[in-house]
Length: 97
Image 1 (cartoon, helix red, strand yellow):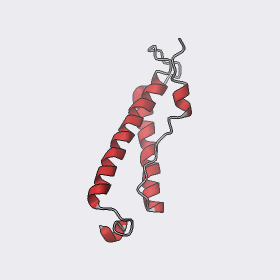
Image 2 (cartoon, helix red, strand yellow):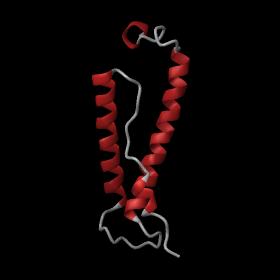
Image 3 (cartoon, helix red, strand yellow):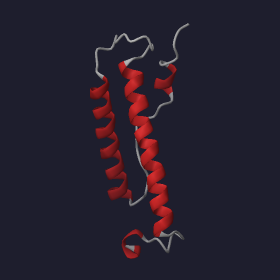
Image 4 (cartoon, helix red, strand yellow):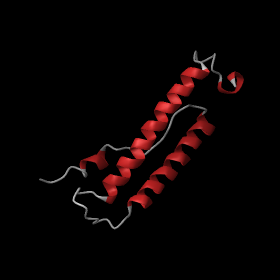
């Protein structure tokens, strides 16, 4: 494992990488749920003006995250996770009061 991932060259251990992987996993789960909720219920009032379901957005976000993360790992050999950014789409989630 050390030879393939070059852990000693990068001055890390399997334990450190495992903990980092768990933290990344929970961050990705959070992104999946929040992103799907923002698009399925953009105004926070139960209406669905976009006409898409929570499940459809959840799956689309998950598939795009998997593809981006696998490509990053295979092509660049880097331990990075890719997911939808929640910067601009979070502004549309602010309820209009």
